[in-house]
Amino acid sequence: EDQVTQSPEALRLQEGESSSLNCSYTVSGLRGLFWYRQDPGKGPEFLFTLYSAGEEKEKERLKATLTKKESFLHITAPKPEDSATYLCAVQNTGNQFYFGTGTSLTVIP
Amino acid sequence: DSGVTQTPKHLITATGQRVTLRCSPRSGDLSVYWYQQSLDQGLQFLIQYYNGEERAKGNILERFSAQQFPDLHSELNLSSLELGDSALYFCASSVGADNTQYFGPGTRLTVL
Image (tube, rainbow over the protein chains, first blue to last red):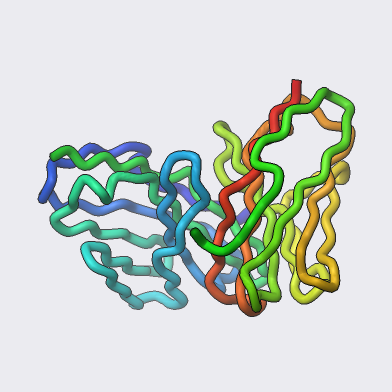
């Protein structure tokens, strides 16, 4: 069965302290891996799509990477406004989507 | 603001009842997706419609059904409601069948 596991469940960082979030996945056939940011009480906001192992994408302080079994979201010198829950999802070749339960990130000033 | 609208924002109803959630996609988007987000299960993909046709189905219960109308808005119908159906229901839309999804603000359903 296709599934996504994210770790850690929660992460507290000091402002400026870089770290990485992990997304491990099992999928019958990968069409895409997605990262979203979700603020409390709001819908997820798209960050990145990765399609194949070795691919990397960057946006401001965030960088997403992909291997055949996992993806990492690297956060460089985070700021308090980066505090949110980060969700990882995969789309399989049947066009179904599977989400992880997320990593709740808190950045302390 | 993603441009996706969902109504109502909140819905409180009783077990056994039926409700309809409505979603209007961003202007120009042809795909609509429905998701359920509960505290214990995270975000679950229910169903996708593309230009009026069902394109992909996830773990959608038989008590739930959806459709996309000619004007591209979509409705999710939930019937014979149970306590466990209490959740946030999100709609998302994308330009094509496989493009970036933009999520709406959600409808919070409470079943008492």
